[in-house]
Image (cartoon, rainbow, N blue to C red):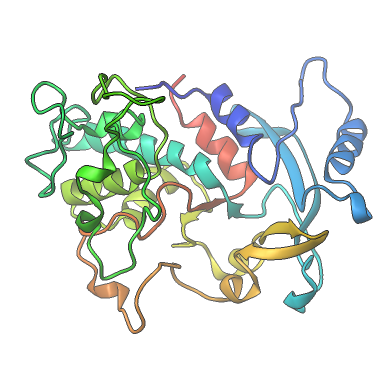
Length: 316
């Protein structure tokens, strides 16, 4: 599996909608220069390109350089709320950086239990976790799910609302059967990289089965509390006061900012945000049923400071 380093994580952070700006602590720009660079990156008026942006540099657990610019909310006139500044402590949807937290969870869980990253999951997971064209010698393992080498390809919808079961998403059509350009698929699980978010829903389900804990609770116990993060998947466990200051995810449509995720209604609520049928009680959820509920592929809400701490928690 790919080894994620502190440098890799910080590089990935730059790809999020709340972009990171590099800062060389030895020969880097002054704080004033960095502030100007961020404001230029965000832009102003009709030329505004980003809702907000920022960076954090940590050394030995301490923030030694940081800056931020832009707004966490109030850009869409339909919100009916004043603008709020985006800061290095503003929690926001970390998108696919969330996968790094899940990979760290899997490694820590493997250290604490009998879970193995390399076990064939066909027996443990009562669904057809086997590529139809590679019956022998090419098992689907947790390591292959986390490294996107399971040969899964994302279906149109890679999640299922509660009380649905993730096993309904697993079928022969989920596996890549043809190579790019046509012809038979000659590379099996472990040999073929294809980025697919469904890998992480299945991985989260496996971890729930192994631990007996719901995914958000497992994340709290394995990563969030040990690293002292003020974070949570789909807002689970995030303090209400901090959540209300969270960043809304926007998209610019026809020159105007429109709320996409985490609008004022979501930020004002308490408890996890999960996709479910009306009247569903999350307290009835049975771990190991549907690991997609807490969006392990991209649902971590965390600040730039949290992400820097997460980077520090990864083994180089």
